[in-house]
Length: 188
Image (cartoon, rainbow, N blue to C red; front, side, top):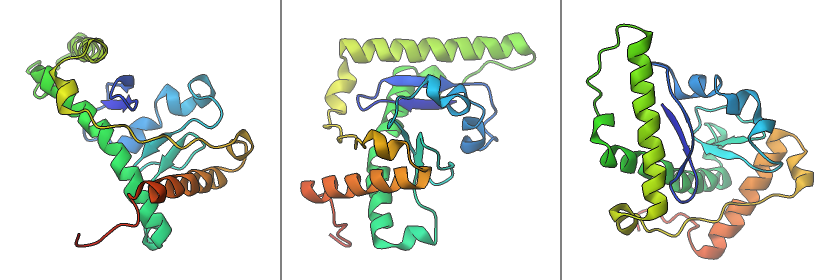
């Protein structure tokens, strides 16, 4: 299952049905969000992803080596990783709320068996969002202030995907230097 969440750890999209042996980036390329991004994103909106994903106008992955070794790219990857922790927390909360998702005991012998698992998982995601809106004990455990999501101008959003990522990187680094998150202090 692929989970996309917002800053408040509410699930905004899920994609279910591929086995765990499939690479996340391969599964993502099968999603409607990837195939028809204009149906899901406004100009300048994007997802943050790890370096396994492809750079698009709507998916900003971490830099891979050797470019990841440049200081500003290392700092950008650090900021990206800090923001992506929110998604991991969201999945952890989901599994904590619904322990059945940690180990499904349904054997998959046919399409109907798979449908049962998918429906159960979707139901848990819907309930997760409902509980998040109502407020529950998870709010007390994960009440970090969300990072601001860097906004870029529409002119930049219309440029190449590389130009777009550079604009997001520039705003991200400026914001995080101003907040004191950067520079990265090794050994501190």
